[in-house]
Amino acid sequence: MATIQKRADEGVSDELTLVQQAKDGDLEAFSELVRRYDRNIFRIAQHITHNEEDAQDVVQDAFFKAYRNLEQFQGNSKFYTWLVRIAVNEALMKLRKRRNDRTVSIDEDVETDEGSMPREVADWSPNPEQLYGTSELGDILKKTIQGLPPGFRTVFVLRDIEGLSTEETAEMLGLSVPAVKSRLLRARLQLRERLAKYFKFKKDGDGQR
Amino acid sequence: MKCTEFLRELSDYLDGKITEDLQAELDEHLHWCRECHVVVNTTKKTIEIYRDNQIYELPTPLRNRLHEAIMTKCRHSKETKKDI
Ligand SMILES: [Zn+2]
View 1 (cartoon, rainbow over the protein chains, first blue to last red):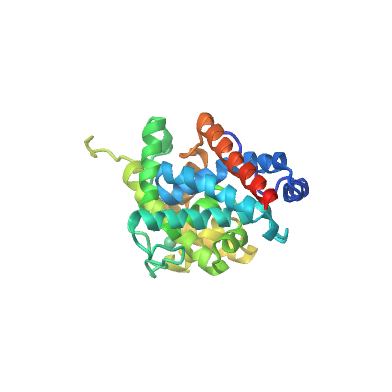
View 2: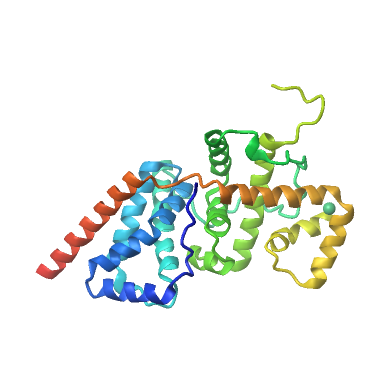
């Protein structure tokens, strides 16, 4: 069973203490910060890079960079927000390198017809989880989210999977709040439409394939 | 209200971040529009299914390995800083 992740807004004051201790050279305090967020950073990195090796590198590089630049962290934002921002940048760099493509960016905006009605309005079976085994479902979810442009899936991951607010997501990605909202809506609708392919409610006469 | 107008508010509607007046308008639209009704339910399910089925968990052995590597780097950097 998935463990409940620590939310970013948990224990903010004790977190600042840890950061201060780490700044003063206490490695144990920094180690505690790593333990607190390594799962989240790994997940975010995996979602952006789609590559486990890259995601491992991102976890290492992001925490090390955070450690080296701890002095620059002023405490105006949450440590987690600051950390994720570093990790997202690292992950995008990896992605660009893999694709040998400098155009991959969080600003990437693919379509503009955001008001248009989704094409696929078929309803889903009451409980899609029952249609597939856990690992098969995992594969479907991976394949589906990987098909989204990086800018869309990053917003979806931070907002809907990691549970951050629109404002926090905007701050982390250096986007405006309306830009985050528009990406989130399109990410949600595109995922829904793609998942419909698998979870469509089977009507009578829809033969098994 | 048209379907396109409804969809523009879909995210805020799902997140429960709309005024009571708008909420009433959207509910009214949902009452007679089956298509938007389906879109609302399946989009809600999309979010839930991603939230409930974490697809990239960090396995404990790998987690420990990464933690060790990070701390080694930090320790090393701390020591070299001191030497300067
Ligand atoms: Zn409608």
